[in-house]
Image 1 (spheres, rainbow, N blue to C red):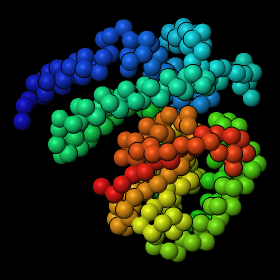
Image 2 (cartoon, helix red, strand yellow):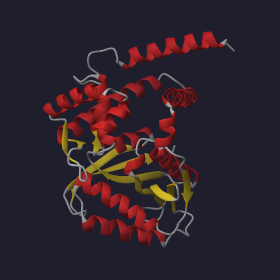
Image 3 (cartoon, rainbow, N blue to C red):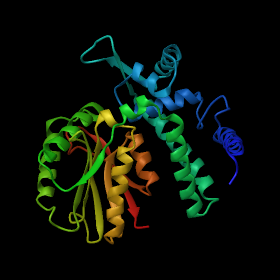
Image 4 (cartoon, rainbow, N blue to C red):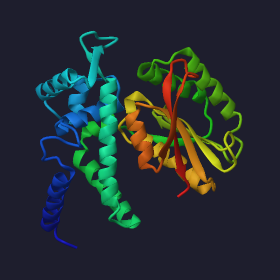
Length: 314
């Protein structure tokens, strides 16, 4: 085992190599004409639609003046939109334009190819070692007392609990009203479908999980093993509350659901989502889902492009 000074030198050497390999020393990043900070900003705005400039500055650990200059450029390029806050009209809330959504999808596709190429040179065991090591190092490198306050302890519960149907419906209704303009028809469909599913939770093929913080549900996901063909799992009602996005709760919920799928002898897992939700798509693809089909749909109240993803049993 190397001594601590040698270990620090080796980690610093590897970190510089990682920075070069990922292209952070280039004038542009991820196949775009944007700076690394602008690319990161677009990804964060996509993951937290409605984030304020102040919160984005804190998230990126940039000075407010640097964030303001970067956001002005993204507004001029047409990648983002801003609108007054509902409670404080002086506060500007940020979201992606259609052009910005397309750019973020291209950024994720570039990064997916970049990482997949590197992982293709490793064994599965080596790839898992890289993932674990990067997670540990990144968390330790960025963790502060404020980070621990922002991302409080969350537990994952399974099965029904009082208020579950109402809370999961509320999270869907609020998020998709803002992201896609959905209204009462969408909320009613979520509530009725979830209610009917909860009546079938006694089946071993069905399960639901909630992320709970301070006894409040802040995320959910379900596996419905009965509404599609035999042996096919349907991943449904996957959502994380706006206040806890980016804390890893979504990834933890998705991993929990897929562990259930893999242990229950399903052959495939299917999910349906909407175009433009780039952060969610990136998370799905990082867990083995493949985009197989898309079509326009109006059942939710507004016309959207519905996307179908499939994950074969590993």
